[in-house]
Length: 104
Image 1: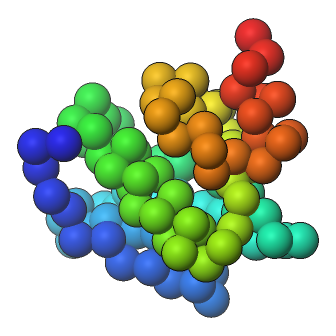
Image 2 (image 1 turned 180 degrees about the vertical axis):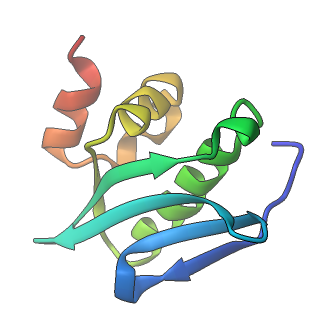
C-alpha cells in the first residue's frame, strides 16, 4: 500500500470513513452482532476508484475487528472480492464468512 489515508471511525453510525475532499467520502459500513463483524457496504466515489482506497478501509476495519475479538463476515461484493484476493487474512473470517469467500 503506497498511500496512507486518515481513517475516521464513527461507531455511532457503524462506518469507517476517509474524507477525500470537502463533501466527498469513501466509507465502509458494518454491523456488529453476536461476536461477528459484518462488512455490509463499501463505497468510493467514482473519480477516486482504482487507488486502493476501499482496500485500505477494509484493512483498517479488519484490524479493528481483530483488536475487538470479532470474527469477520464479508457481506458486500467488494468485501468478498477483497478476501478472495487476500487469502492470508482468512484466519479472521467467521465460518459463514469463509463459506461466502469460497463460493463462486
